[in-house]
Image (tube, rainbow, N blue to C red; front, side, top):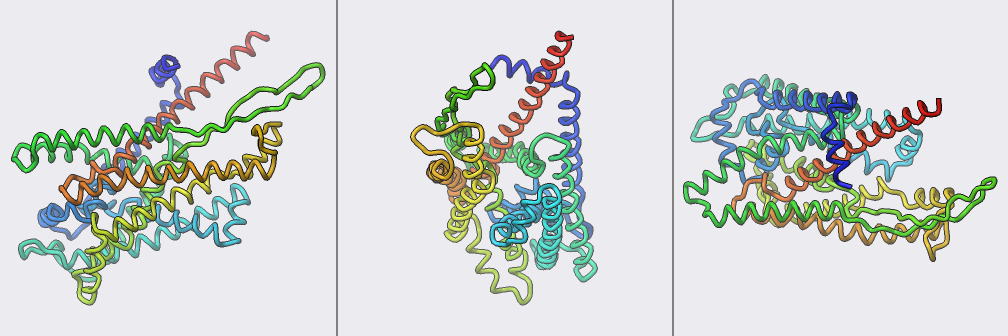
Length: 441
């Protein structure tokens, strides 16, 4: 089974549509990385770099990882794609409680466009909120008496807000273009590109710490071993399935008998994929980043206590992050998989689960199985994300070696490869159909 897949991957260049999609994704990611190096006006880059060197193990370091280093350089993409993700979460939650939005969801393409429009409006609002907090906070930052902002005031705040919001809107458009004209989820690929872009410097920095004696050789070896073990666990759990047996009844059409075959319904242990840690990080970073940037500003001193509790490794951060990851594992699974629809489709196709009556009983059975395996999936995702977080807070390990970053890298890579495989398989089916038509002629 493996040899045809490898052969198919080797023939990617022969499938023009797939090749164009891959080249389009690469071009868009290059544009993203170029924008991640265009700075916002009015910032002393040297002082800003010194400030972020001191804040690598704080929440700003985590935000900087998701933005691909754009925050530490304060570029036009400093806010990253997180406002869009937060707006998407809010819209999905509102669809559950709002009958009007739920009706829009059922209206097909027109309803989806309307919901997308509301999500974009929410993205702009959240981006403005974060940009204002960031501009206020930057004016209060200084290193060794040297301020980060060269000329503070209303003009700097206005330019910063406009620049950062425009960058987020452009990233939102870029992600949508990658999704429609490329391969896979554009938002996930943008986050993936940002994390991967920082891996070489993180590895180099870790080796430099080992050279200077801050890390021992055994510590570096243990860190690499932990990364490999987490990667292996992610791959194993992401491929794990609970297969529910399905039997199709025999039916006669004319003089021929159809059906009567046994099959199975595959349910993934982690149906939500990489969405829970991304959503959880986004919701935590939204208020915590505002608190981090405004804690030293005049009139916002009380926010310093909140920012301290929301720092990685603190009990409040770990508690909120764990609860949000578990919640989104169940929430997103409920969105992407509907047991009632699955049971109805099985009934229409003449399929049934042995020992379970078709219809409502089948839906309840599938829902109970899905709930049990989602509990396992939620525990797995939470542990993968939290165990390295503890190492980060206790031993100063870079965020790039954390469970969240490794989970995103591995899952997005697997999803992208699956998309490539599906395009190759569809191309092979089209070739076979054309050959069959030629033979008939």
